[in-house]
Every structure is written in C-alpha cells, then in structure tokens.
Length: 472
Image 1 (cartoon, rainbow, N blue to C red):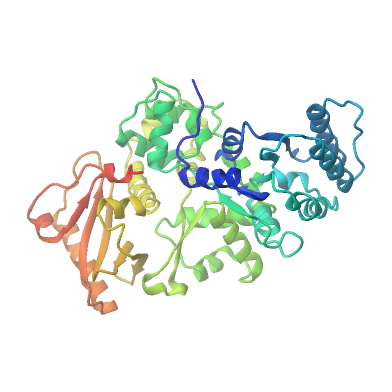
Image 2: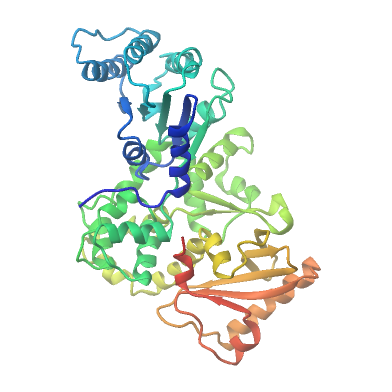
C-alpha cells in the first residue's frame, strides 16, 4: 500500500515556499511524538536530501558525534572521515561536504530529534548557531530543517531563542494531530471504510495521531481495534501513556499532575483553581509547564466571553490521555474483549458526551463553515456563572451570538421538557448577566440531527449533524 501525505495543506504550502525561495531557509518543525513530523519532512523533500541525521535517545556526546560522522561517511563514501571531538569540528566537516557538491538545486539538511543531540554541556546549540549564521544563511541553496518532539526544548531554545538564533527561523511548523477530515482520508487510503459515526467513536478514543491510526486492522470493527490496541496485554496503546510524557518533557511529573487534575474535571478549570489543586507555586515554573502542555496539544485554553482572562478555562483535550485515564488504566488486567463490554456501559455514555464536546471544540472552523458564517468575523469563547455553562459561544460581527450545544447519540437526539428548560435557563442567564443586545441563536451540533417536536421547534435556530465536522 502506497504511503502518501494526507491532508497537511497549510504545512505543505509552507514547505513548498522553501523550495521556491531564493534564499536559504531555516525550518523548525515540532509536535508530540507519533504525529507524523519525520514522515512529512522525508516525503516532501525526498528528492532534495543531501544529509540527514537523527539524535539518539539518551545518547552521550561521543555517541551523537559518532552518529553524525557515520552519516557523513555514507553520504561522501569516504570511510576515512574521523569522528570529530566536538560540534564545531563536526559542522566544519558538514560545510566541507556541502561545498563539494556541484548541484545548483535546493539542498536539504535534516536534523531530526534535535533536542536529543543537544546533550548537556556539549555546546551543540552554539555550534549549530554558528553553522547557520556564518555558513548556511550566506548561501541561497540550503534548506536546514530541525525537528523535535520535545516541545519544551523546541519552543524555548529554538522558537523563542534569545541568542544566536533569535529571529533566524524562517518557517515554523507546529504539527498537530489529524482533524476528522484528514482522519477519514487517512483511513480510506489504508483501505479502512468506517462510517463517520464509527470514525467519531474511534477519534474520541485515540484522536487523530497518524501512528495510532496506522495500527488499525482492516476488517476489524472499531470496538475490536480498540480492544486489541488498548486492552490486550501486548497492545501498544496499553503502555503508551507512561512513555508519552516522559519522552516529551523534562521533569514530566509536574506535567502529569496537571493532566490528572484536568482529567477529573471535564468541564474545565480556571488557572487559579488549577494552581490551588496542583499545590504548585504560581510563578514561572507552573506557567512553563502549562504552556508546554498547551503548545504540545494536550491542553486547550478556552477564552471567557469578552476576553476576561482570569475566567479562561483549561481542559484536557488529548483524546488518548482522556481515554487512558478513564478506561485503560484501571482495566488493563481484563484483556481482550474489555472494550466491547465497557462501551455499552453508562460510564461510556457519560464519557462520550464530554468527549464529543471536546471533539467539536477542535472543529470550530468546520462548525462555522456548516453554519455558513466562516466569512463573517467572529470570536469563540466560553461563558459560565453559578447556574449555567456554555462551552462554545460564537460572537459574530453581524449582531448574532450562537450558543452551541453539542450532543452525541446513536440516533436522532430528542429535546425533552427538562432539557428544554435547561436550555431556556442558559439563554436567560447569559442575556441577563452579559446585557448583550445581540440576537442569541441556539445551535445544536449532534451526530444524527434532532427529533422535531414542540421543544425543538421553539428553541432551536440552527442545527448541524456530524457531516459538518468532516468538512475540509
């Protein structure tokens, strides 16, 4: 089966610009592990590579230098190249190799798992800065791509560098998991034909991580695949959680503390409450850890209506982490068949409701497109008081506010009298507290639509089904 790049339109457009550029480019690519960073770079630049090296996990300085030199020997076919003693020497060898190439085409140097190479006291970053500033940037034919899963290192040492790389990055790509549209395309490319309802169930459990999706078995149902990957004793997602955070973050215990708190509070929590519950100091270290989780796509910040920053809510938005902590962690010993029992339980019903909300909040652009308001300027936010909570408000420039309600169900959703009263209360509370003079439209986002009855006829202004979430 042919492997090809699925989706990633914005990222591919940026990479295409580097090939058309009349100057050298320094491209930084980062994102959580398994999200497809290396595949994207290798596939897009496959005809332009002149050098590629990957950092060694837990490798020493001498290990990294050996690895760097080994690739040079392969590329130059010169077995006499000796392993350099330090990084300045290593990059001098790379410069000599590049100077010896006759091609005028764009040449790609790819350094993968960049943070692993930068071992303590190795002066790797200093030598790399020198290589870019005094050699690569003076040419017009190089594309230097640096890539890493350790978001904390990539952001603070590369993107926000205050030294020799300050403002030197010419293209920045933060690679996120697939959305629903890309997930559907990826599955079809792999010969897996699930309904959109099935894809949503799958996405709520493992998210849009390409490597996770690649392990699905053609011919098995969603429940069978989840059982095998997550609950079988040898299933690779059975133990993925324990490696996930330690591989991405230094001192990951503090990150996990935040993750555990957010997992227990699905509706979200303010920053001040999160500090209190975590028992961490409110200074720079807490902010750093929270920012790293946000930057890596595990946590999302939802602005409060009219941008009241102190009331912003933080939610755990990584599907696999939520699924692991809710179901896998306490059911590992049960083995194959576990999920087929669990997903008929009341616990699953409650969890799937919250998970569908999280999924919708990742597809706000698709919701706007479905409402045909994507060309209208709008601001997304949340709103709550003691009596009501709205997870998604779309405050539009055309004098309308959409209050979005998101409901997951196996068939058409029915608005009964109790829920109708709840919705009326939300709208009344919102209008009473905010004093907004805009029209308030209740918008329902569901899997299969809503049953038309007296309650829906009176209160619902717009409705979208799951097909809208799969828009490009």
